[in-house]
Image (cartoon, rainbow, N blue to C red; front, side):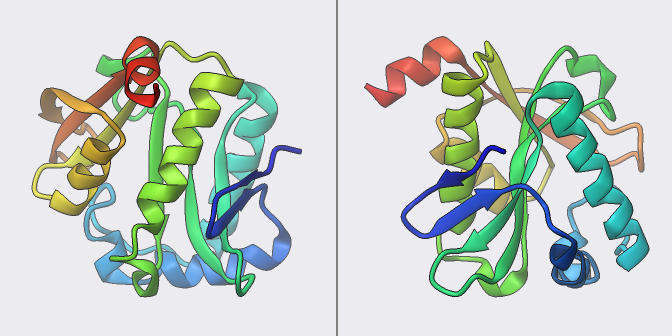
Length: 180
């Protein structure tokens, strides 16, 4: 079982008791505003998502981590790596993504968590390239991508929902250069 630790966070695999707090994150319209078509998700949809994320760990050797606040044990949301098969034009690729509850915004936690996931992807899984995809207008996510050392490489339309998205990228060579 892969577990990553940062100064404020524990990134770990999912547990049954994570479903309800993650469902609360997914039920917040402001959190979901920039996700696909902006629809919220209920507890069953969240449970199905957690099961799919865990399956990806088994099939890919990476996946989405549950993000736990070290000091409280509270589930903040997720971060991690996944295959962005919803956007075939960028494949083959691995995407770093994140979703935190609103009470955890503005503290640098998404950047801290995503940086650990990127490090894991390059250093532990030997990935050559990591992308991140956000809807045009989601400036907060673009700031995180920039802090991760990523740069925009294309703008396109997400076939699911028809919204414009921007794709950012970081190669393993660029990662090595920025971490020295």
